[in-house]
Amino acid sequence: MKFSKQRELILNYILNSHEHLTADTIYADLKKDNPELSLGTVYRNLTKLTEMGAIKKVSLPNQVDKFDKNLEPHAHLICDECGSVTDIDIPEVKSFIDKVSKDEDILINRYNISFNGICKKCKNKK
Ligand SMILES: [Zn+2]
Ligand SMILES: [Zn+2]
Image 1 (cartoon, protein in one colour):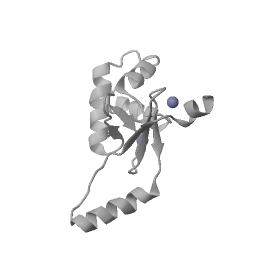
Image 2: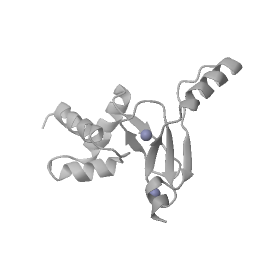
Image 3: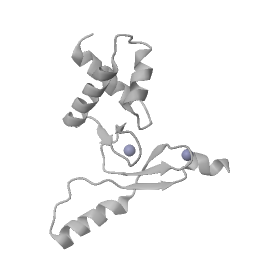
Image 4: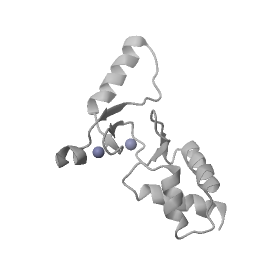
């Protein structure tokens, strides 16, 4: 399999998923149909795809890096119960960032906002 083919395979897998995926998850799932795929290749391609801006790497405290297809700036909720990572849309964040940038006369290029709590699924189970 060609290098670019593998990259496409990995990218499509992420684009078709609704989760925030770790390299291990992607590898384990794709390996079933692509026995020649190696974990090293998955890591290399994930780095490349992140550099290209096709996906976003989500670094969270005490968690392995996850990969996100949602390129818009957004916040994350990390569930205390199941460990899942959920996107949260907070329109106020953008105006907040704009305000801080203006007030402090700075330019904010990236930010990471994550909340710890209970996700909708776990919350509704109780
Ligand atoms: Zn949960
Ligand atoms: Zn996300």
